Amino acid sequence: MSETRKEGERVCVTGGSGYIGSWLVRLLLDRGYTVHATVKDLKDEKETKHLQALEGAESRLRLFQIDLLDYDSIVAAVNGTTGVFHLASPCIVDEVKDPENELLAPAIKGTTNVLTAAKELGVRRVVVTSSISAVTPSPYWPANKLKNEECWTDVDYCKQKGVWYPASKTLAEKAAWQFSKEKGLDVVVVNPGTVMGPVLPPTLNASMLMLLRLLQGCTETYEDHFMGSVHVRDVALAHILVYENTSATGRHLCVEAISHYGDFAAMVAELYPEYNIPRLPKDTQPGLLRAKNASKKLMDLGLQFIPMEQIIKESVESLKSKGFIS
Ligand SMILES: NC(=O)c1ccc[n+]([C@@H]2O[C@H](COP(=O)([O-])OP(=O)(O)OC[C@H]3O[C@@H](n4cnc5c(N)ncnc54)[C@H](OP(=O)(O)O)[C@@H]3O)[C@@H](O)[C@H]2O)c1
Image 1 (spheres, rainbow, N blue to C red):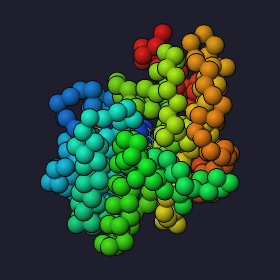
Image 2: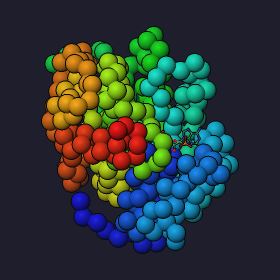
Image 3: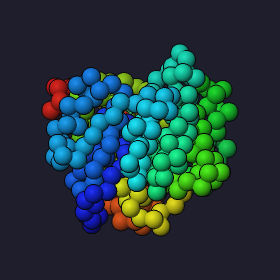
Image 4: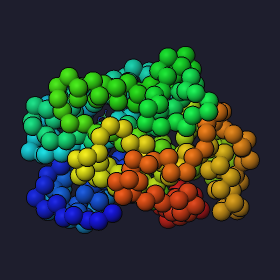
């Protein structure tokens, strides 16, 4: 991807302290942008230090404390920016006790709060980070058809099965599209798969925790959560690509390939035989058709996806160097 310098352009990254957010802030600073990054607690060094250490941060990074349910806190972070990347959302694939407060409200109300602030403050374009969790689980999608950007997660199925993270991402993305249509705000969406790769923050997010658990022998297959992996740097690049290319519209599936979690686990076992990787069934995502080049829209914009083998190697080496595994 060619690097156009964006000196002087000011953008906001909600969830800037997070796993993907930190990478996005880093790449935006590298490209010359001035960045307003949001964190949940400005006094917590675990959220701030890794951002302040980035190249260019001293002069072009401002940190803002927000709560997704506090509109005024969001206004302060978005004010003065021409573009917003909305990543902040709770990311929990384990069981939750209080889905409404832990997942649904911050995801859905948080999204409408961010979009309302963007509209009010005259922001040019908003990139919303959705997920393949807004694409799958989709049990009624035709069995012989590849899942693509037209496919939506079945929220009733999620509610019946108590899988609340996909429900939260689907309802949040639908709220974003509805807002865009009704209020005339320019919105574009990225739908990443399971994101892995080098970790910048000192704590682990849900997707890197999945890999850590696999390396520790966990046999969970994430039947309703997995549809392929993707390198964290590619996810950050995808956000920048759809922001900078005004021709980019709609949803953008962002995976190096559509694959099963069993494929991923088998490759981890092959590359790292010294760990106790369980043998999982070949088809861990019943009925999911595998596909290379599934993220054609992003590839057409110039994104060359890092392959699964390299994603795994860089992820495991990062977990080692940060002391999460020996
Ligand atoms: N990781 C994946 O595999 C994956 C795949 C597809 C889509 N996504 C989406 O990508 C985005 C970032 O995920 P991630 O993997 O980078 O997770 P992460 O590291 O947990 O980042 C989530 C970010 O959202 C912030 N946040 C959460 N609840 C908030 C609230 N109530 N108010 C203000 N900020 C809040 C977090 O702040 P704190 O750090 O202070 O908690 C953090 O900065 C999310 O929208 C997620 O759904 C992730």
